[in-house]
Amino acid sequence: MTGFWIELRRSPLRWWSIPLAAAALSMVLWTGGSWNDSWPKASAALTRANLPLMIAALGLTAQRVSGIHRSRNECLPTARSRAWTELTSLAADVTWLLAVHLTVTGVVWAMMWGQGAPSGPWLEYPLFGMCGVVFAAALGHALGRLLPGRFTGFLAAIAGYVLFLVVFPSGESPLTATVSYQAIDVRLSGAHLGWRVALTAAAVIVAASSVYLVTRDRRRPVIALLPAMAALVGMAAMPSGSESPLVQPREATGRVCTGTESGSEVCVWPEHAHRLSEVITAATRVSQAAVGVLPPVDAYSEHGLERGGVAGFTLDHGSGDLLATLAGEHVDRSIPFCAEWKDEQWVAHSSLRLWLDARSRGRDSLPGYGYQSFGSDIDYRSQVEETLTRPDDEQLQQARTWVETTRAVTC
Image (cartoon, rainbow, N blue to C red; front, side):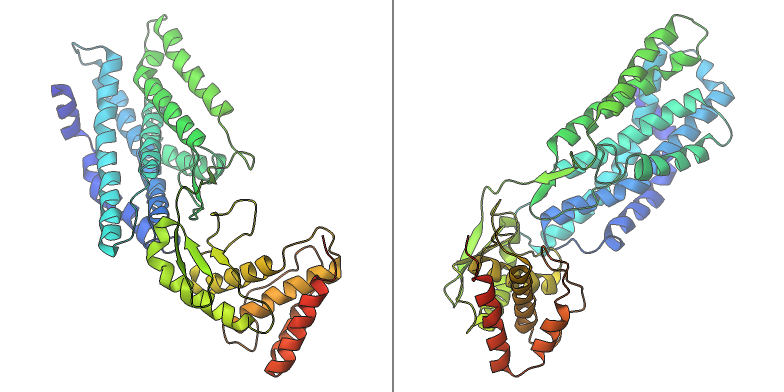
């Protein structure tokens, strides 16, 4: 351990730890939207810190190792193998980088516990981030050893930006820097995380053995090439693309439910238990807006709790989206989709969803976002807007007409 402590004290990354912590924490706090209302979003938000840390890890370690090579300090005698010396040096750099990552993680967790949000952190997301930092540092170490130069670190940092945002785009590859999409009903893919861990281990072995690729001993490079080839094969075979997304549907193992004044049951994921009152208030508004047109529904369920059925409402995108998705769920449960519907039925069904959304908000005009009919190219927005300007009794009559139109075709 003596060698490790010496490397830890002399690593230049110790001087970068404070600015890197500030940059990483800024990425979490002030980019990508809010996350402090649920542990799933907070856990995924931690991965925003990965981008500056991974780029810095690649560039700084490459520059440090390149400088050692150019100064010929690696020629100093040592009692340990050269691979062990390389691994010790890499471990010291990684320790400073992981200290930054864990500091940011601790800050986010402390904020969440202070909010009193139910459930707890999803630990695979910090593991995802730490693996990315180690992978980038190992890659930078190998580049610094194999391609030493005055601008190696700068070029490695640019390469890191391209690699982690372009070559391994977010949401498609185990080697991406961040998890860009996170909803309550999805979770990090176990297969992608397994590949990330395996490729990180391979990168560390490549970094430790890279010193043998610049040795004069002709036998050593052959041994060093084997882990490099294994890492390249692994990167070529790793899952990616739309058929193997980084996040996958989450199985509902529990739910928190309560009743409303209208007799409907409202169910949310356990992590959103503290927001039930918000959903009940919104569901009550939707039920009241539907009086005289549609009967009360038995239940409202948050998106993902019922697979293969009604889409459900969402709490991930603000109160406006909550009302819109609750209104859509109310219509969908009252009048289920029918494969035999023609354009007339699709338009009527979609118009009803849009009208109920606007009515539940107490508006006489449509919300500011666009709508397109489900299954039809017909623009029905103008008809709904015109309906909203009429007196209440005329609006209810038009809404009942849409209901009759959808029910004219039975499945």
